[in-house]
Length: 139
Image (cartoon, rainbow, N blue to C red):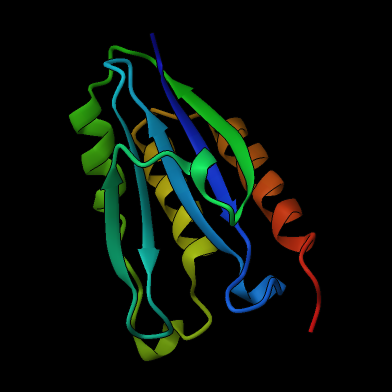
């Protein structure tokens, strides 16, 4: 059974504006385990966080759960987790516009670079994430 990768899109906090929507990767592994991986924080202070056995469906703020890719079971859970968790959080002065949406794109690109996810899957998933992001209110 392949590992399934989803992009999670959550309502913005404190209000559901485009700039406040939060995104994360959600991984369902063949062994039946699952993890949510994302960055949290604000400009210049983002940190990586992984939540094991998190069920996004129970969150009242979940807006979309976007299927991103299926990774063959020949690729280990540990390899997928280490690839995603090695995606850096960008906190330099040059990265003040960087956010969790860009981290999701960077993580999917790392998976693509290792041939775990195709470029087509990555691009379609990012497009769907942007669509979900754009459904929020403007200021």
